[in-house]
Length: 338
Image 1 (tube, rainbow, N blue to C red):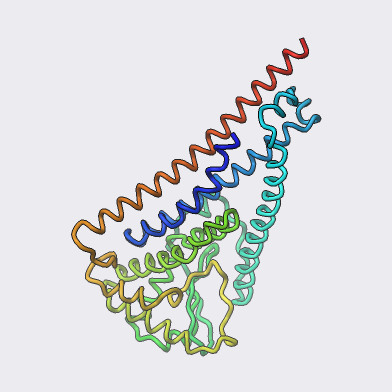
Image 2 (image 1 turned 90 degrees about the vertical axis):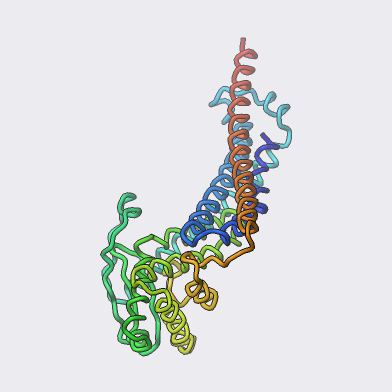
């Protein structure tokens, strides 16, 4: 167990770069799913391994062992370093648990504060089905403010928030593309991807490097959806560029503080997004030499798959080893009593 349980802690340092490399070779939607799922799976495996280490140490406490009818001497001989690792794992679980709760509280507080600043009623707590069920009903909230800003505010229902200054900065076709971009964020539940990335970064430091590329690919996903909605990639590219330019003219002290989970069309590396929209390829991927792009994509995919498999296998093996150890310790205790 001690050997296998280390895999989920070490694998993310290799898996995160592989996921980023693979995402660069995929369309935006697929790239966002790869980055989001990679972060969630690796963070979950890391947390599970910490729990297994802590459980292995707790079982050696005489009071706990007595409740489970375990032989403490046998457990001590089988894994002499479990208590040391269990103590460290317990500390890590407490710290990461507290940070996760703080992150969730901050996200919820920021969303409530943003809705209150707009004069919107606070939505009721959604059920799990409502949280993941898609909806196309996204009201538009226009703020009578001179500075340029636009973003997608999650909620039930989600709202497209745009200022009068942003609407004046764009002609009618580009305004339609901008609103389609923000609507795509809400329809595809991009705030859930952002929230997952934040939790993953808390649970394992190596997964922090997934947040920035995930944010970029979510913006590219919304760009492509907006381009299909208005039927013109050039208009969408101009809307993204003009919106970012208008937003940059607003002094920082006058900008409304946006929640972290409220994506915006003017965010991220705008020149790169505009270049992708003006690319002749429909998904915005840059052309590569014949065969080179496919080989790199295959290598990155295989590397990422291997990392995820090793992490999952390590967690499963550590769980199985702990289960077998408990069974043997129970049998040893039963034999000693006889």
